Amino acid sequence: MSTRSDVYILAARQISVQPPLTDAWMDAPVRYDAPYVQAIDPDYRQHFAPNEARRLGKILKRAMLTSRQVMAATGIANPDAIITGTGLGCIENTEIFLNALVREGEELLTPTHFMQSTHNTIGSLIAIDAGCRGYNATYAHKGTSFECALADAVVQLESRRIQTALVGAHDEMTPGYFTLLKRTGYLGHAVNGFAGEVALSMMLASARGENALCRLRGVEMEYCPYDGEALRQALNRLLQRAQCSLDEVDAVMTGVSGRQANDQVYASVCSRLFPNKKLLRYKHLFGEAYTAPGLGLYAAAVCLGRQHIPAHLLAEHAGGEQRSAGNILFYNQMEGKNHSFILLSPCGK
Amino acid sequence: MEELILELKQEIIAVLNLEEVAPTDIADDAPLFGEGLGLDSIDALELIVLMEKNYGIKLKDPAQGREIFKSIRVMAEYIYANRTK
Image (cartoon, rainbow over all chains, first blue to last red):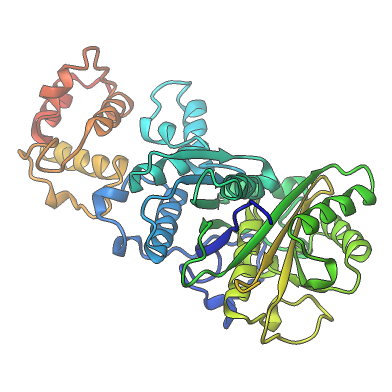
């Protein structure tokens, strides 16, 4: 009998290019035909007192609000750990601070933007807001920032060091940073998908609770696999630990986005490792961002919680909507270097 | 002086991101810290930067701020008497 604890995703809230703080995208997703879309912000005046939020940049308001709502929804006001993944951190404040540094000849820097220009401002602010004095860590590893944060939480939950963890994925996209991405050809052209923004908070726990979305059965990451076999071994390690066979996986959610170079890696890996599986996608709805995988995992978790996979999540030629959802394998990779697999199951399994 | 007071109110609202506050909401003689606008020590740093950036006034002794930032009127009078730009 395994001594590892189970891990459940109890609840999740998002602010992104889809309607904020709801799962409305499941039924009526907003579609975009633009290379750069900023998140749809809720009316923060309804959620914060004026003095409370006046110093906070957008990313901080989003992170605080999604965290508060997840904590309220789960009744966990003081999680054992707050673990954040962010590729760019508070990039808007960083830009303001650095531009002022250049403009003012390295003098007359405003303190607020400086104080809130670090990556770990997000996690620390959530902790201060909630009064959490426990474990607090931030992972900033480009396209795998979220998976690193998630893996940290899962290891600690499985080993029973903690019982609850608030895990976040937060990234904003500024016009300045988008311009740089466009110049490099990374994003900004119609065929490459679109740049979006991410604020996702999810509560993980070792106890299932009454309304858990799904069970999280493991995370496996592989950096620069020397060949396809190494990637297959990574997948097998995940499945073996979860005591699940590939045949029991019903669908694979990938980060296919329209960016050709990256999508070719997906196509190659998917055809080799899971040739007959139903493929799901999410970046056509949520856009591209370093921590976009957080939204992908959230989308898969909501599908499992509702036992419904809407047709608009299915990759082309993958058939119509599904009124049930079994095990979903989440596969993310970036430039063929950083690969990650996450296995989700319905709560009953 | 009245013109400077209004200008100062607008600058403070912008720099401190007081979205809900209009210049008319700030009484010329109301305290800026504690009661009144309820500003804090980080705001004081922002105001010191504002004074230097916009009016060329460099506060050498931070303790001076306690007197200068007493109210909008006191602040405007100090700026009027000491501004270099």
